[in-house]
Length: 154
Image (cartoon, rainbow, N blue to C red; front, side):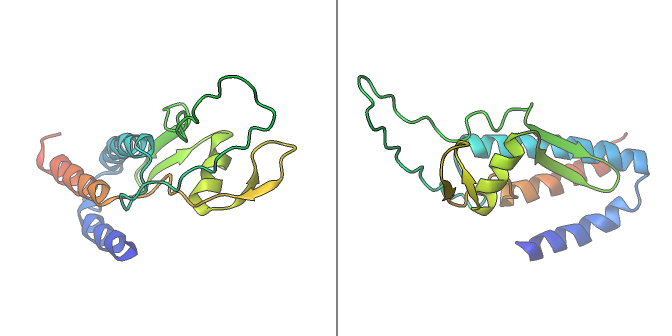
C-alpha cells in the first residue's frame, strides 16, 4: 500500500506542481470532501480498507439485568457524522480526521490500543479496526478527480 501511495504521489506531484496554489487548494478541498464521504460510508458498513469486516464486539455481561435486553447496536454509529469527521485540504495536503472526544476513541480502535470503556472500568485491549484508511477505490477517486480537474476549464 505504501508503494501505491508513493507512486500516486510521484504521478500527481508533477501535475500539481504546474497548478497555482489557489487552484491546488480548491482541488484538495474537493478531493478531501469526496474522501470523507467514502470513509463515512465504509465506517457505516463496518468495513476495513481491505474490505474485511470489523472484528466483532465482545459480548457484554449484564449481571442482574432483568426484563427485556436490547440487542447491541452497531459500533461507531455516530462516529462518521460530519460534526466529528472533518476534511481539510490546502495547497500542500489533504486531511480526513476525527475531532473532539471521538478522536481518542477512533485512535484506540485504529491501532488496537488499551483503554477504559468507562472511568471506573478496567483497562481493556481493543481489537484493531481501521476506521480511517485508503482503499483502492479512494486512490482511483483521487486520480480521477485530479484528471477531471486538470482537463476542465476553470
